[in-house]
Length: 141
Image (cartoon, rainbow, N blue to C red; front, side):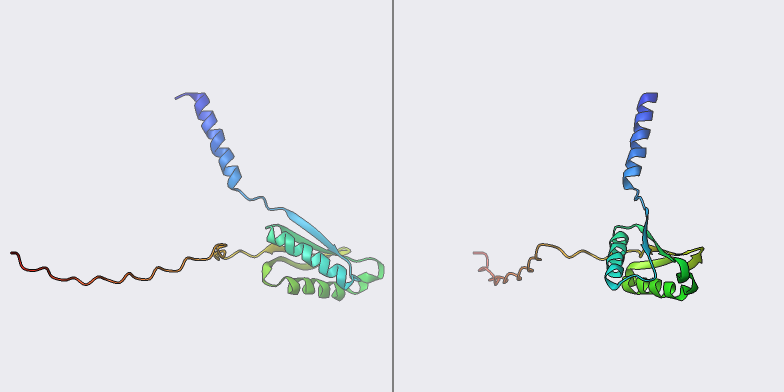
């Protein structure tokens, strides 16, 4: 066997296997405890888009100064994020306080094998053709 041909075929197999893999990246969205409703909705919408694309999302809540005295405000915001995303997200790592940041990791929920609706309408089933009457022919003459 030709060694050059073997190396070429091996490279082609590796290249083909790389095409079929899905690259999952980690996206990060940062919140603050005093976030407004409009900003909150915008950031949740971005998280929603990231999850639909198949990325993992790291949600970080940053505390500054006296905000550190009220970590329950942070958990309240992160719970609201989970509630808004609903069935789209699965919590990989629950919210935990690390220094001045509270972090949580979300990943997309596994998609069910649901069929996509067809764009063209389904053709109606043909009506059964009427059967012709079979008339026995006269006996052999």
